[in-house]
Length: 292
Length: 160
Image 1 (cartoon, rainbow over the protein chains, first blue to last red):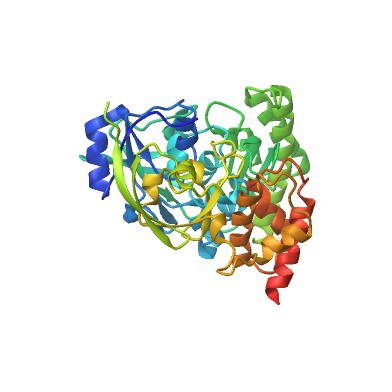
Image 2: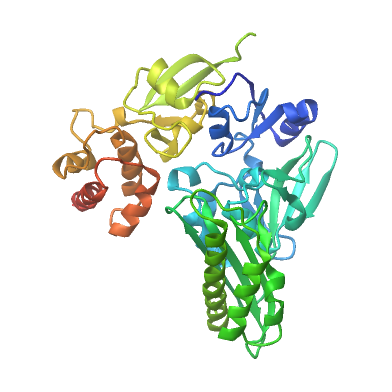
């Protein structure tokens, strides 16, 4: 298990990295944290001819304020940076709650936000969280910049909208409205493993505790992160009752089409998705109502 | 095909080494084969087992998921640097010995690097926090209980 030969280039700047990618296209891979790419190279499942190391580009990392509140997270920001930023955790409690589920401390010390999202593993937590938060992805080439909404970024298992000359450079997260409660839950075989089912919920309440906005997304149950918010449409306009929440769980179970695996059958995943839907909606509702 | 070689300067346990490495050389193999620091063990080579954990600028990372060429200008710490200059054990090494925190010992260097870094940041951990910090290191012998006991004992001793 050793990587096949490749040419290694440590990019000195974002412009340098992008010009190398423009030159080499699909023959080249960006190396960020390496926590997904290096295992696939060690197995020789990936054999890029060129490896463009981004780790010296300091401007690609870090969290800065967004244009209209919220935050912009540089692609090279590591999980660890988010984990240790108390202000960020207060602003995005959904991410703070999910981080301990994302692999292990050693992986979180290296793994990057941009690397995770560009890898687009459908069992990974972060893509589903980006859907729930309504993230916008900023993408750059040597010639232009563009941005896409999270649902348009994830096209399939390990497949994104990124073109051969493009890099995901920044993720923009909008500030959530007042009276919003969030919840992340996951069932995995062991803590830190990929999810058998993971769920992210964002719920906003009005003055009478009526639900005004809801996002309900899953990881691990499809080829991409799954946005199942439409299963919760009928919650909008009133305070969620136990019965209404049970109905959402049933709709979710009918809507998703999990693949199943040797570790968890599709039926089991569907069952777990229903259970987690009930628990996460209840929790998000309580948090929105109680203001934390 | 010519190999893609790079001249690197890496600091390991405070010693600077200059070497020429092929780009595909993993940091774990570089430590073991080029520097003869074989205390860093190689288990799965895909980031699951934690046996190869070293400190990169003080933070635990998988050395099998890093290239040696990426360690240029960084400070690496391995198990060989854990004892003090007189050869006295680190309190966690002593506690692992006292509490039978190892059997075959293959996972032990990775566990020591992970948990000494953890104790640097948290000298009063709960048992749950210790287990969480230990979650990225597989041990197939001990069942972990004695390792947890050792970390708790080391924390107590280091608090003084």
